[in-house]
Length: 233
Length: 137
Image 1 (cartoon, chains in turn cyan, brown):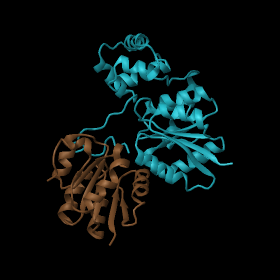
Image 2 (cartoon, chains in turn green, blue; image 1 turned 180 degrees about the vertical axis):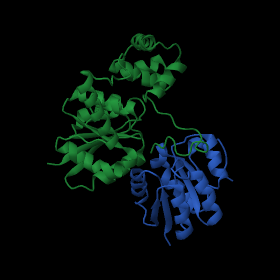
Image 3 (cartoon, chains in turn cyan, yellow; image 1 turned 90 degrees about the vertical axis):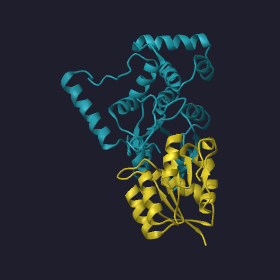
């Protein structure tokens, strides 16, 4: 039986690269592609992949929120997160969401095959930095008897995280409602709950919060001043 | 004579993708790859490709500086910028640096073949959504 893999990235050029790479392995097939997190969750329902590979920075529903939904949908779902950064925040969120593999996009050509193999054999795969962080967290718990690395978004529900991403991407409450199949009133309630919980009072502050917490990613407008930043494939 | 192409991006997975997208055309030949601007300039000097497909945000030397140097050292090599920066300012900078074409990575699958075809014939190519922003010539 073939190992069936679903890939999700908003850039087709990256999806082509992932397909080319994964299909070099006999016995593996890319059974579906998605261009954002929402489509990935929907497709996973239909094609029931063995492994899902998700980019973190995707529109509409980012890879971390999509991971949560995939695991909620199927607790055994094996998910590998692809990211341009292994910042503490992204690592925490990915682990918390239930990802079992974590691969830097810059290293994907080298690490992705090993990551899929690891998950295929019910193991996990992390970058060295994630390994260090997991170990540090484990040791810390050993000393303190509690997890000192509490997530930075403790008060937001998964639904509120979806809503905050869409609002930060510039969508109105009406558009949010339509995308999430909610009434406009419910979307507005989510919006006011989010702002109350985070103690923010404008959409501008909400966008800043979303960027700081890797809920959305922004491109650097001028590489002339920051030549190496934000190199999202 | 095939069109000889040098592919430059710091992410190997993107280079794989560009190879796959360009690979369907027998008249195009990917002669080499580079992973940053410095390597791109060196390889362009040595291999004199017809087209350099060039990312902007790369370590060591960014694509704009690499573009300037390639155009200066090897004027026959055309440069097609493929970037995630969907901004008019960046496009102007790229064209000012001597690029003949500019496309955005999110639209690369749609625009890459047409852009490469144009640029390989020394014609400008600006992705449609950017067309109103400026001319390359």
